[in-house]
Image 1 (cartoon, rainbow, N blue to C red):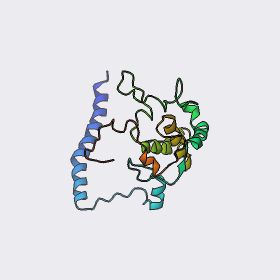
Image 2 (cartoon, rainbow, N blue to C red):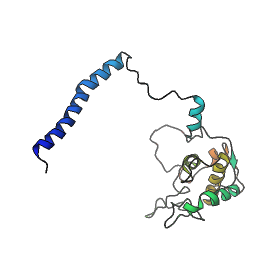
Image 3 (cartoon, rainbow, N blue to C red):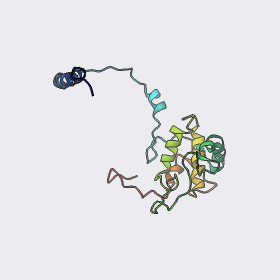
Image 4 (cartoon, helix red, strand yellow):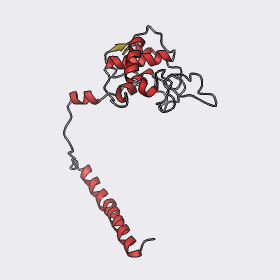
Length: 193
């Protein structure tokens, strides 16, 4: 329990700060903004080239998919070198390992659903996007576009979603129909993927 004098001084400063911000700050900011006088200049303008280098977002319809390609066979080599240490040699995850990437197809409506890339993820573009931006965990964004296409192809192949001879690229990736494609309700009704 604090003494009244200590508590009062601490809380009075907080109250006064909030009061000044709300009573004086908000109307002043609003008035300046209305007159277009409030110009905040933080940092520096970013060039389109620099922005393009960091804008890695891949949409569900494939916008911004880069050039490149890969096969499951090529992906097996990338997986062994870059992914197996976390996801396991067989991509099934396990004790002390990252989540499984394969299996569980058809299990989502059971009492023990298994959520993997193959069973849960609705779009193959999500696999490419996530792998490209976040994997491998100890060196994100270190894989080339060809390596990301290849390891994506390998994971899709292990889930029996594509065939062994499939070439995954910016066109064929969009044609991959994931088993759970229709398992989600859109936040944007009427939006067509």
